[in-house]
Figure 1: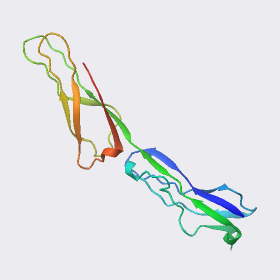
Figure 2: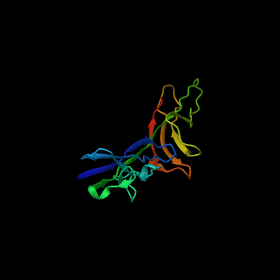
Figure 3: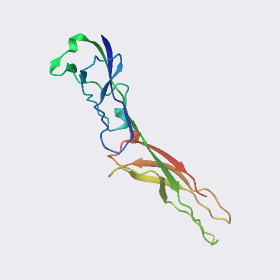
Length: 166
């Protein structure tokens, strides 16, 4: 009797914790009445870089049991790995805005805030470059032009977008 067993899939947004799914199910064919699949998937993914098709393999030694009797030899088994997916955290940085009465000097505001998402644990930004200046009456953009991450922060775990304030 032919069956296919498949390890479970899983998906989460990066949070610094390992994602696992030990579940293995029969996805094609059927077990005979009273037979039971004994199998475990062994994959683990923590970072976006760990995401890959089939990264949740089924451990060697899987078997089909009928009570206390191993009946694996009654089956032709195809084992398929599952996929564990880590998605990046979406971070949005917004340049701060400022106002003042005209005094002939340049108005600048080189600060920002995180307006969407959050970094995990001690991970985060080492620096953010904000550029903008207004000397005459009116308004102009205050723009984030770049950032660097702290040393322990893996860039692929985050999608960072800039939002402009006027």
